[in-house]
Amino acid sequence: MTLEEEVVVLRAEVQVLRQQVVTLQEELEAAQERIAELEAGKKRPPSFVKPNKLRGTGPKLPRRKRQAEHNHGRRREVPTKIVRHALERCPDCGYKLSGQSVARRRQVIDIPPPQAVEVTEHRVIKRWCPHCERWRTPRLNLQGEVWGQGRIGVRLVSVIAYLRTRLRLSLRLIQEYLQAMHQVYLSVGELVEVLDQFRRAGEPLLKSLREQMRDSAILHIDETGWREDGQNGYVWACGTPGPEGVRYYEYDRSRARQVVQRLLGAQFQGVLNTDFYGGYNIYLGPHQRCWVHLLRDLHELKEEHADQEGIVSWAEAVRALYDDAQQFMQTSPPPSQAQREEQYLALLQRLQPLGLAYAQAKKHPCQALAKRLLRHQDELFLFVLVDGLCADNNLAERTLRPLVVARKISGGTRSKRGSSIRMSLTSLFATWQARGLNPLTQCLQVLAQSP
Image (tube, rainbow, N blue to C red; front, side, top):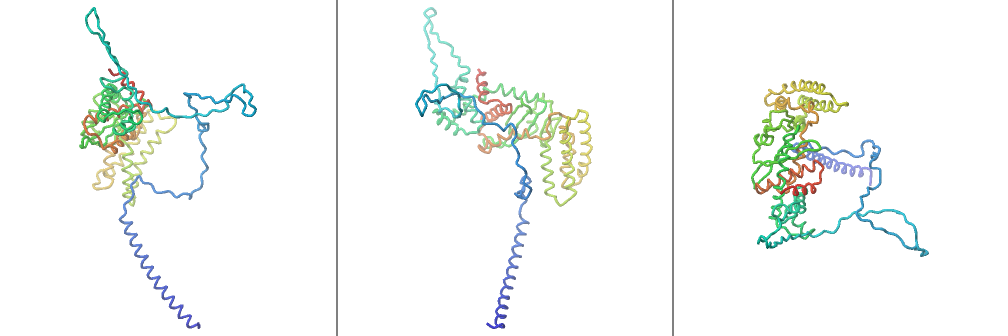
């Protein structure tokens, strides 16, 4: 090929490549326009979703050492049965061995084989009295063995209540468990009757818990939705802090403030810790509002108006009040009551200008939260004054959690009787759990003390 011919071929190839470049540029512009359209229409992730962290980009931290209490051997249980393994004669020479000492130990933890239920038949014998000329029979006293006139013993009742309330098993699964493990068949109706019997036996203890709740110095309350027979209602959960805390639940069709008044009664004079729902405003005593709800709304405000510096700075200033209050409470040694009161007044003086800044600015994004700050200014920093008071209502939220999970599984209850059983049993078992008590032992005590 001559030089002129090679130049012609190369020019043709360059022309083809240029056409390909133009085509690729057009496709790239179309793709970029489509990406821009998708990004413009894409919803922002919720505030609780955190972005992924890149792995391996930062410096490698040194391996954290285990704490001293974890540096020990496997914990040994108290043996309930000891099996000895020893040789009588030497395996090499056959000579009889003498002396002994424990070379090593190995524990095997297992459960005994499932046992069938124990059916005890009490036969009341009548006998004739020739002197009185009457038949005499002994009075049968089975207190501590069975409750009421039923046939289900107290241990079996306790297991059924535990499976239903703490493990949240359905009645069908409880029926299957009893039949598979203990060879006893109980109908669903009989299981419901057993749970209702336990509820009636626990009524005195339930009344005592309600009185303890009303006599407490600090009380957390929250509510959530619950359906009864297909109708919407609400579960009200009350909780008190401390090792002797109380967990109390009630169902009501209403969410009105009268329910709060009925729960508190006339004797409650302590500090009420709630969220910002208006139904709790009926209580005129000392009140602490949940900062977590307020901080969540502030975070959403900053996310929605991230490009407006004034709104972001205002929200951060409100958050700074909470951070300063928490930092003050964590100082060592703990502040005195006079220091607490001084800090409380200082926080209020910083809070009022923030609320007044936008409280009357109609249609401003900060107006609703600014009005909330002014409306509840006396109820935001009460945790600074009262020892043991939390700035959030997390205790009530965690108290409601078991029933929220049960609601997702079952959808609610079918009758007023079912709601009463559910609330009563949950109150008892949740209180025992909060106090670190064995629920089965407490069930036996409740049934044994009932006539």
